[in-house]
Image 1: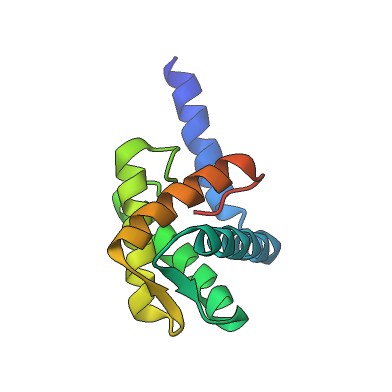
Image 2 (image 1 turned 90 degrees about the horizontal axis):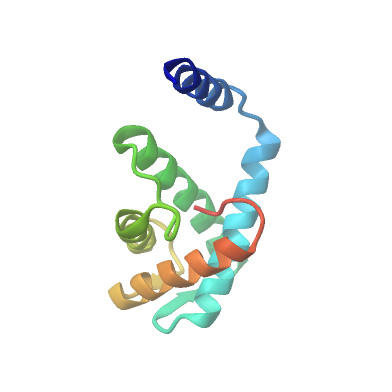
Length: 128
């Protein structure tokens, strides 16, 4: 049992080291699509243009990466329960202060995290 856990840890470390620009671009594209869908369906959540959407996708990806690296909490709204849901809502709300043209209310962030969780469950890949 311990050997299996050790192998899983080593595989996770190798996966972290095998980083490619293609994976990064694909993740930003998926995040942009999911955030655009969430903004369309969520009241109190608007994005003013394509550049704001793309910049928001990059910021969300960076914030998710940093939170996951430093705290170990994954910001997948449905994949990690209440903590993941709250972290996803906080990431959306904080993005408002970093990206011009990305406007979201607190309730919009909560509903947006729910919509992102639903869309993330349906679409292949991982948005947050």
